[in-house]
Amino acid sequence: MLPVEEQLKVITSGTMQIVPLDELKKKLEKGVPLNIKLGVDPTSPDLHLGHAVPLRKMRQFQDLGHHVTLIIGNGTALIGDPSGRDSTRPPLTEEQVESNAKTYVEQAIKVLDPEKTTIVHNGDWLKPLDLQKMLHLMSQFNVARILEREDFHNRYENQQSIALHEFIYPVLQAYDSVVINADLEMGGNDQIFNLLAGRDLMRAEGMEPQVALTVPLLVGLDGHKKMSKSYGNYVGLTDEPNDMFGKLMSIADEIVPLYFRLCSTLTIDEIDQIEADFKAGTADPYQMKRKLARNIVDLYHGEGEGQKAQDAFDAQFKKGEMPEDTPEFAAAAVVELNDEGLIYLPKLLVTVGIAKTAGEARRLIDGGGVKIAGQALAPKVYNVDPEPFVAGAALQAGKKRWAKLV
Image (cartoon, rainbow, N blue to C red; front, side, top):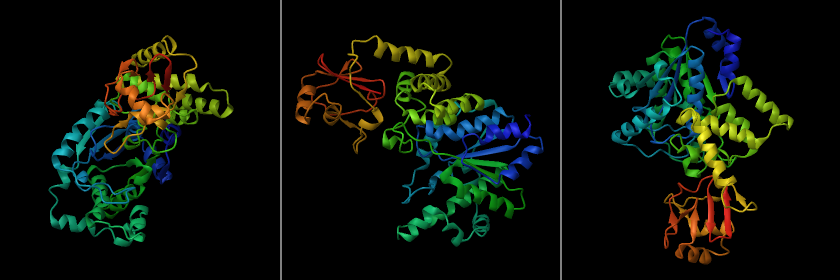
C-alpha cells in the first residue's frame, strides 16, 4: 500500500469533512486494508453524476487497496432519510424499493470495481430486529441530541411536523456500521449527523468507532442549484453518450475544475494542474470541457465512446447548415419542466427568440415547421418530452430561425 501521506493526498481531494482526521491517519498507519462503508437508499431508479460523487471516492479507496462495502438500504428506505428535508418523505413500498435497488447496483458498478466490492442489503438485518434489540439501540440516543441536527431543529422551531419514525433513521444507519464493522463511512455533507451517530453507537458497543467522511453536493449544469432531476440540471448515468457529451459541454466555465475533481477519472496531480491553470487564467475552458466530457462518457459507456460523442457533436455544430451567428442559450437555464415533467414548447420558443409570442409559437408548431436536432416536432402538441432538449441540440423553425442549446 502507498505511504500514509500519499494515501491522504488522494483521500482528502474533493472532500468536505473528515472527522476526526487524526483517527484516519492511525487507521491507515496499521498498514491493513480498511473497510469503507457507503449506504444508499434506493428511492429512485435513475442515478446522475451527483449520486456518483461518493461512488467515485469509494473507487479511489479501492484503487488504494482498501475494501469497500456498499449497503443497499432496502430496510432504511422504508423510513426515508430525513437529512435535508423540511417534511416527511412519502413512504415507498417494498416492491418499489427492490426494483430501484436492482437498477442502482447496475449503475453503481459502472464506477466501482465489482471484483473489490461487497454489496449487502440492510433489510437482511434490520427487518428481523425484535423489540428488545430495537429498544437497546434506541436507548443509546436521546431526543435532545437528535433535535440538534439542523433539519429536525428547523422543523421543530418552525412548528413543522416531525414523524416519530424519522427519529429512528439515524439509529438504524448507525446500526449498519456496527453490523459490518466499518472503519470509515462516507456520505454527502448533509449526512454528517448520521455518520457521527455511527461513531457514537460503535463506541457504545465497545467497538473502535468509524471515521466520518463527507463529500460536497455536486452543482448542476446551471452552476447554481445542486444537481437534481427536478431542476432539469442533471447528467444521468444512463444518458446516451451524445446527450451526456452535449450536456457537459454546457456547464459554466467556473465549475469545470470542480467537475474534474468530483466526476472524472484523472489523477489528483492532473486535476491539481487543471485547477491551477484555471486560477492563473491560462486554461482554455472550451477545450477543457471537451476533455472532461470525453472522460466521463468513456467512464460510463466504455473506452472510445467519448471520442465518438465528440465527433458527433462537432459534426452537428461545425459541419451542419446552422448559421454561424446562431444565438446560443444555456440548456439548463431555459429548459423548464412543468408539473408533469414536460416542456411547454411555445414558451421555450419565445425564450430563445424563435417566436415573438406564444400564439406565434403555437402556429409554427401547428404548421409542422419546428424541428429539434433536425427532427420535426408533431403539430398540435405543445407539452413535449424533455429528452431531446439538451445541450447540443439545435432548435429550428423554417430555414432562417435558429437557436442552439449549449
